Image (tube, rainbow, N blue to C red; front, side, top):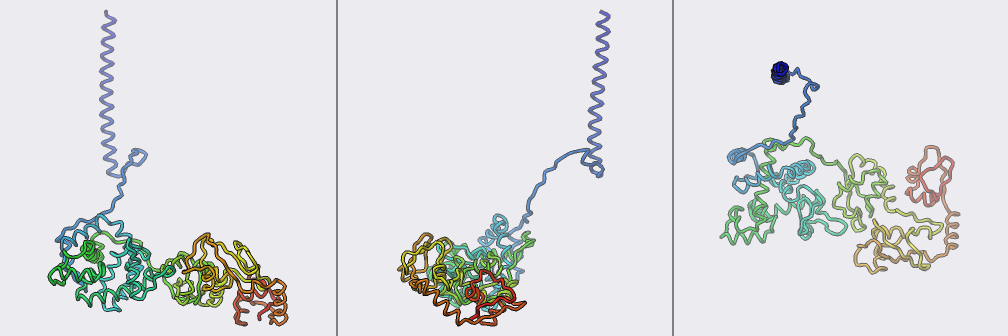
Length: 476
């Protein structure tokens, strides 16, 4: 009994001791964390003492604004083309600056590529500079964009309207995608619409839906001549079109107020115009000149399928300014080389046949079209005219497709190899030669003798442009 009493007493002491220690531990923990928090505020707690991962919220600040604030800003804008705020315009301001910010940022990044040229064009035509913003609504500043109804380019011209304003539109060249030509045409068209209606907003509406629909809306409205006067009688798309333009006009004048200033906008690639006066392939030009193919394609968006056809040999090509001097200095050589993708050998005409062509008779050849081929290229390879090639194959256009079989009748193919050899021997006996001197190059020799580099290579059966002093070359 005494033992149990004793044990009970000890046990109670133990429990009291445990409770006491537990209280001390809890109080100590509380004091430690309070001290830690206090120390963190003073900056004395390092990461090894307290490993806490805080959430990192990435968000973009979108400033809030009211109708009254926007209206006040519009009243202070100095514009050639004024407008008044209403609910339709305000709703599009909200849409672009809040809900569609990513699209707007993408457009703003392209803005500097085209707006300097737009501004100059509008001023040359005596038009309000603000008209340039219409291209944003039309295309989002994408020169190669195509609408569901077939309108194309920065200013979304239909084929018929494009041709009416001097733009070439075919399967090879589509000037609607040319920034300069399409902007010039858009300025002329909009100016003509303004002369017709005497109001820029109505002219914009006519640009979107056609002057016929605008005249119909004017009649149905009882003769009203303002956009908002004929608003209810216009097609639905056009009723949204002009308010979008006006919303963009406000936004571009208040980018900072809506936190839309870009850190890295894209700028235009400087270029010069060069005329090669021949049909050629952009990829071939890139290979010969060392120009980046994507730069050539970007500077010349109107060239379809990367090929300038014979019918457009006189068109000028935009060349990056950094390469323009080299191209102009070597224009004769480049022009000659661009047209000779597969060299024709004098000694044996059968060697000029492409690898994927097979001879079916002495005079008739068959050729299987491969990817990347175009009709004028095949004609040049075989030394025949484009018209003859079309006639032989009963083609109404120059459109061909991979795997198509073409028939060719190259001139002189019927001659025997013996006749070709005799002709070569006769030419060789009357040939003019030149002995290579130290420092000479094929380019210098070609200039002295009014030949192209390719012609010298063919005359001398050279596989490269490497020559050495003392070497004798046929130059005529």
